[in-house]
Length: 156
Image 1 (spheres, rainbow, N blue to C red):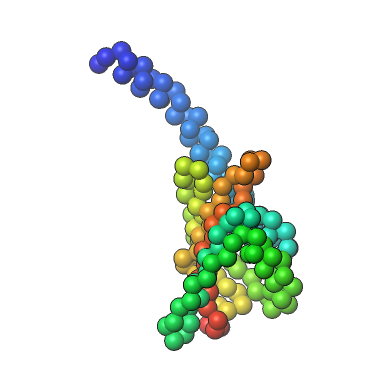
Image 2 (image 1 turned 90 degrees about the horizontal axis):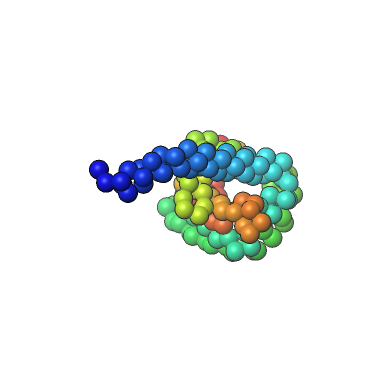
């Protein structure tokens, strides 16, 4: 074994715990961010809109009982406005999402959170739900992408 290779291996092994701790911290921060998102949503707190980047892309796939599908996309600024306006109606209707099977995936510059999203109001599960978060210039996580599947009819 040459000396340079041996030095590289030793340095890598010394840095590995640092990487593992950083990755662990990132997952914990992402989990805490998502838990905050859930709590704000369940409490119909309009400040949930502040978790979105102005440049976020929100994708919604609407599935109809006749098999038709409509795909929509919203920019972050528009979505934040819609969220704030819709909170009173959502609260009146009891339109809450419950999340399960939450998985967190670390990427190079962001974090993807996948989950099953259950609509309490309409009794269906969206198994395609995900959100992508990344840190802004101040070091705070924000939602930069979100995808959900919805349906107009109730399965209750």
